[in-house]
Each structure stands twice: as structure tokens, then as C-alpha cells.
Image 1 (cartoon, rainbow, N blue to C red):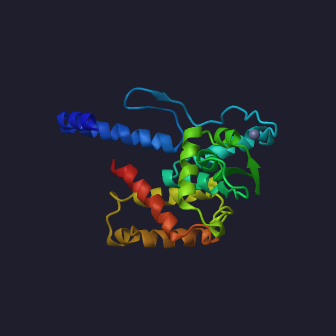
Image 2: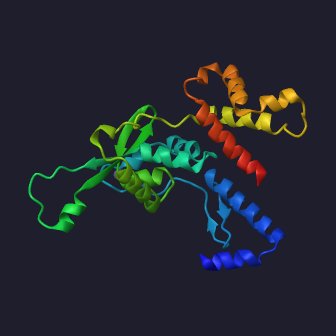
Image 3: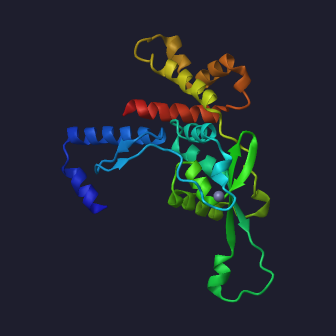
Length: 240
Ligand SMILES: [Zn+2]
């Protein structure tokens, strides 16, 4: 930590700007699942389906190539990271194991306290898969899934909360694209159209209203908060 700080303080303003710019470029590439090179020069490949799960249920084989591609492209298309995480987490369930017999040892008891179930959307069907398939099909790694599972265990304990958000599906890519395009169209004109009306139209509330007027069928699917979140992340990209 202090090493980084020391290095940072010796950087010139210009160097710092360049570093911020690079960091932002990396962030965007990562959110979109594209290949990128880290600041330390390590190449991180694009998001893609991992190896078959190899379990006896052959979970990964239940998805054809198109479905596999779609899972990846739907998840990594520039969505904010917290939304990607929330989506993955909505497909994980923490299952409490009720112990009837008295625990033998503390370690054994601790190991058996909870377990996780993993699900995937296949069309409109939500099917259970093994952990390896969940990791592979989402083009992620075991460590990331473990982190989300652990957070879920810490956050969602009461039984009545279980499955509460499990029916939530990711907004389809084409709908997400409509929002992004809408935000981009309005925001990208901000320096060319300097009328008062236009500035008014740029308040996110007005933008959202315009969006719903244009796509009334999305009124229930796309709430204001969600639109605002995407607008924030767009503006963040723009400012860097
Ligand atoms: Zn499997």
C-alpha cells in the first residue's frame, strides 16, 4: 500500500493522468469482457466459456454453443460490475443444513453449516448446475464465485429470504442496448446543443421520461434507478 502511494506521489500530473486513463480503459474492457493488458503488463484474455464441468450430470453439455455465447455476451456487455455480481449472486442459493445428530467435532460442524446450490437460465427455465459448470458457463473463476457465495452467506441467512430474488432475470441485451443508445444520444450532444431546453432535457429524470415515451413496453422492466445507474456509469466513462 505504502509502496503504491510513494510511487504515486512521485508521478507527474501528466503521468498520473495517463495512468488514470489507462486504468479506466482497463475497467471498461473488463466490464465488456474484452481482452486487456493490466498496468503491470499482464494479458487478461476475453471472457469466454471455460472447460466442460466433467461431473456425472454433464451440466455444461446441456447448453448449446449459441446459448453459451449468449450467456457470456449478456453478462459482459458493459453492465456495471455490481450488476454483474448481483446477477451471478441471484443464481446462487445458500442452503442451510439442519443437523439432527449432535455435532461430533467443531470442525465438522462448521463444515456442514451451509452449502451452495448453483443455477443457470436456459431460456425461461432455471436449472441447477454444478459449481464448475456455473464457473465455466459464466466465463469466470472459482475464486470470484466463492467470494459471491461467501457474501451471500453473510448477507442472506433468514430462511424466508431464500429465493427472494431468484426469479429476477438479467435485462436482455437488446433492451440494455436501447438504454445505452438513448443515454449516449442525449449525452454525446451536450457540447453541441447548448439550448436551455436541451440542458433541461439532460436531467436524468427528463431523460428517463423520454426513454419511457420512446419505449413504453419497457416501463415495468426498466425502473428509474436502473436508468440512473447506467447513466452514471456512462458519465464516468466520459469524464475519464
Ligand atoms: Zn456439472
